[in-house]
Length: 306
Image (tube, rainbow, N blue to C red; front, side):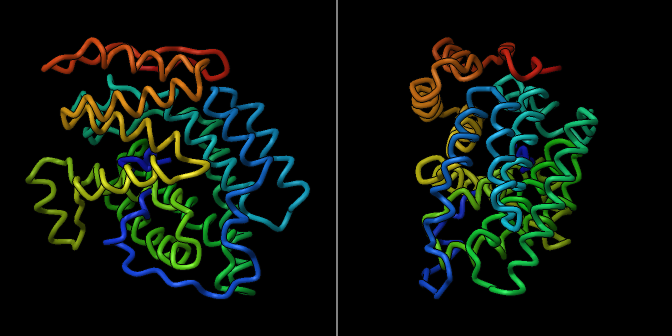
């Protein structure tokens, strides 16, 4: 969701990363990207595990705004979320098992979901680049680029297990995210993938981080957690995604209270999602020892594998 990238699918949200923000002139109000009814409804359906209905909303936006990359970027996010759910990545069974979380062997993605994800990514980036040529401060385009490139980093890290590629993409996404946040600092979703990337790289064994350091690649686990926390608190479309990732990372760090808070809020917001309820119940069963259980299945998405 950047080992995740599913991690893939970002914490821009670190003032330390961004530095002081400034407001630049733009032809769109910065908050416009955060108030699109079709996109809002689509993501809400996605977190209810209704991907088909969610994509119908994103497609409706695309049809009425064919030049806007936000619809395609949102569609790509739906495929990433669905693949992460299918793989069981959004569960404690995955996050607490180092053989699954940190192993180098790539996962086996659903071919149709993979193809659809990269097609939506390509469309989003194509439309965004066209808009940025006309206006370098276009908030929708910057948001779409930060989101889509960040999700590619998540996919490379979580699904394909290509950490070097993930870091290259993370750096690219970071550039767009900083530009966006300088204009629209409230667009916290921009850093979801970046936060997971930081956390995953920082969680790698010491000897792997040592060699990555020679290539100028560094991950900071604490910074990743801070970024996820900001996205979980101040994010918009991807806020629930950030909350489940933060909860799983908190369990790895033996911080069950943080995980319980995030999961309780998700259950309250999405009571029909069995994944959130199942993971909350598991937190209640843990004391000093974290023992991963099996992920829940649901209607809408295929049950997680592995």
